[in-house]
Image (cartoon, rainbow, N blue to C red; front, side):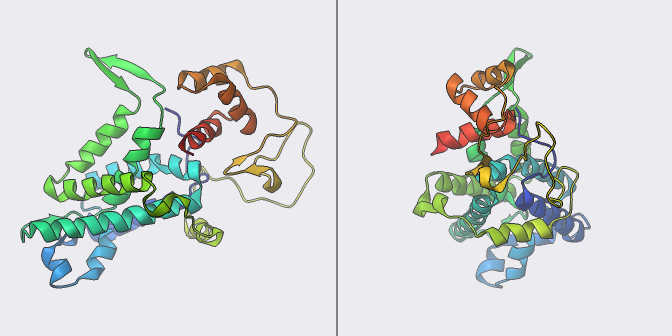
Length: 293
């Protein structure tokens, strides 16, 4: 299963969330305060401890949850690359608000003083499992002990580990996140048409720490070497992906076969490779985005 280049290239929002979760968890979570961050019925409807809601949104309560949570957040950066940082920011905000509302509603219905909702960005993580299930194709299948598995199995197992990490305290926010992801998928209130202005994602790009997977900042204009084409030239962008140029060579047969093996039409796979300058990762995202329209 190919999710694109390594690192946080073209995923500044995901990078900012991963950094925030790491810092908040180190400060408030794994240093012994994790059990105090879970919020209960009294925190919302009696004490109104809003600060707990804000801190707990980015704080895992234990090191194992941090490991699995960061792994899933890092993997799901593929969706930011697919729909763009502006729309992905809306997806995250929508998932957070809706899942938080559903969690509050669940506490209101249960009214169990002993039940507290686990801290951590569970709504953001589990809402991403909806497009993961529907949009990411299986590229590899294998058998183990007479059981069929795929490369997506490991993501599902990490999600199950996180979902059942603290039983009721983690299941409730996880299920609320899945519902939020379904509502976004169903285009509730036409939310899929909304996107933030460009300056917001630029803010995330400046706020985040640099990573090894990022492209270097553009330098002064220079003449291209023969055969070289700027990858993300501003006038050649079509949607979130680069438009084809005349110098793009014919897509290699193995790249076309790889996309066809994922279930895409051969001609569509060829056109997507031409649009992406024979980058299989970007071509896959182009095909997935065209199917979701």
